[in-house]
Length: 288
Image (tube, rainbow, N blue to C red; front, side, top):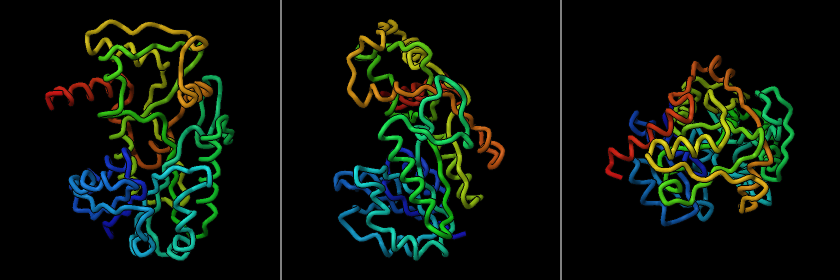
């Protein structure tokens, strides 16, 4: 197997995957918009490339495995906007292309369950942009595409502990609200399994086994820290940014049975309790 991966939009989830692959001898190239992030990528063992300020066409044509983490903007998918012709030409020779999407494509289900067969019906502009991007990638003939629909991502450096510690966390209560989540290391393990067992056209939900109300997560973080549980605030009364409020427009439970059957994957952190406890233990080990 040709162990080269081009990671376009080398963000939080992609870095977790790259950390695993580099240890196994893979050559990973990760792109970033910011020159300030180049050194950080290099420190992980990946090769940094600044994009879109540089030309990726030769890398797209050469690398057999490509991970797309860059999200769509107002003008649509930024990777296809610049590189579609090259991707079309390279598609027959490509081995694996992964696209990181979101479970937001399913829209609101009033706390009900969704799986990969659930019709896409996003209730936000952000979700619709993801649906459009998925369709655009699926339209490329002969592309060995794998779509991963990610639930709410958390992990080291991305969790509730900082806000709970500094007293700014709130338990926002909206009747019936429930979210699915996924620890970043469980994303990385699923992507690695897929890289080792490509299945052209596959679509996988990535989430843990235990959807939960957001206020429960904040409360448990406070319990782990040994601090008072943050106050409860009714959703209707909460001061929130439009972005934060939009997340409460959808309530659903996401099933992960398909990827368990197809790839033998199971989450190392099956619920937020195990995930948060691991994050806290890891930060304590670093003296944080």
